[in-house]
Length: 194
Ligand code: GLN
Image 1 (cartoon, protein in one colour):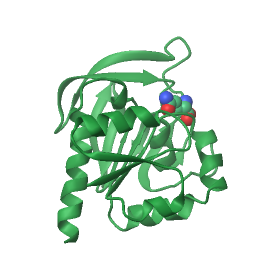
Image 2 (spheres, helix red, strand yellow; image 1 turned 120 degrees about the vertical axis):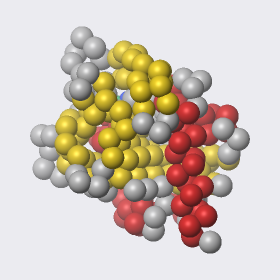
Image 3 (cartoon, protein in one colour; image 1 turned 30 degrees about the vertical axis):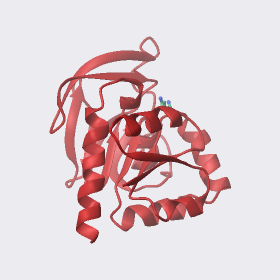
Image 4 (cartoon, protein in one colour; image 1 turned 90 degrees about the horizontal axis):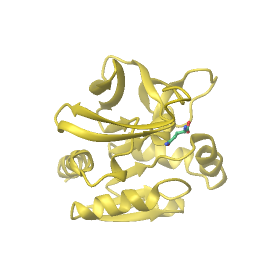
């Protein structure tokens, strides 16, 4: 399997390290033509508005949408989840607008800019150490979205078909269960293509 990590800004290396720790190959994606032979793509955490600017500058918007529409899995973490969302509270337009969720940016309050919490994540496992950094949360999900985890009654991980998103940073810990869950989605999608 070939996994790409969008390498324009943010926690790129950490995702590459996590995928490699799971025994798969990961590539930093800096140009659109690198997308073509990927089996799955990770949109890292960072700053969604900065990332969007770079997505536009390097022409990634339509090619990433096409990748998603071809059924290849995409995993958005933190800012990556904001990029995936169809709606962002307080904004007129989404970025990629792929996943049927509404997200609110920086939604855990100033005093709690970053914190760690243990989560039970459906189909992934219990006591997952989740690192939240100026994290968004999902305020609303569409009918085809499966909620995978909540923290203090807020949705912080969800899946819609080939799209996976979470508010936190699984790549910043040595617990690879959530990354493995994504890699399994990629494997299943690849098997379904052949
Ligand atoms: N606050 C950032 C944003 O709105 C996301 C933070 C992160 O990715 N850790 O884009």
